[in-house]
Amino acid sequence: MNELTRVQGLPLELERDIFLRNLLRELSGTLEELVGLEEASGYISIVGQKIGDWMNREYRDALQLDKLPVETLASVLVDLKARIEGDFKLVSLDAEKIVLSNTRCPFGDRVLGRKSLCMMTSTVFGTISAENNGYARVVLEKTIAAGDGCCSVVVYLQRTDTDDDSIGVEYFAG
Image 1 (cartoon, rainbow, N blue to C red):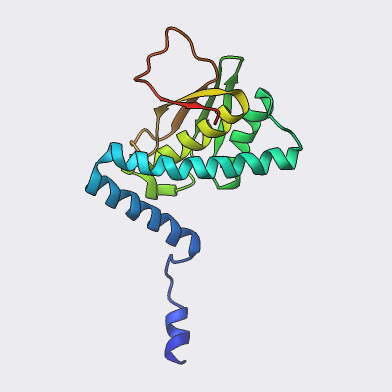
Image 2 (cartoon, helix red, strand yellow):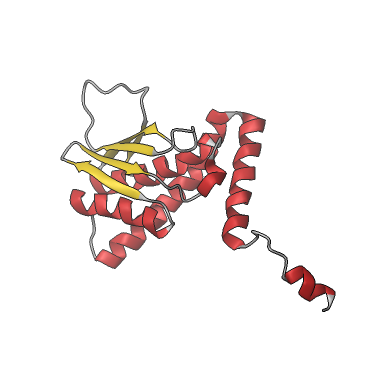
């Protein structure tokens, strides 16, 4: 057996998906250490908005719709997470809000302790929702990253006078 064959046969958990999840974990951790959680979350939000814009275009084009109706929007949010190996479920849907739960993060266990990565969910959901609805406020009530064991996400579709601006992140159509 030559050396390359021996090395290639090693039982390592090293493949593209794990590599990319570790890369994101280390990148977000480095940002959190260097600039703090709030600033790191801000940087990740910029990326999340670009990803949200891209995903929104993909779904609108595939569905041949200029705007996604609320029922379709909720289905898109669940579907996009399923496609990247999340396990989001629709808990409830009405004219005011979409409530979702999740038991499996697309980042796997690499998300633990990396709360800034949750801004990907907030910003992607918020961007897609606002672009189709005009407004969205995303509240991450529970997150796997924070050690809650699951995620609970509420996407508010309407702004009200009783909104607490300190809770969640607001998104507007751009």
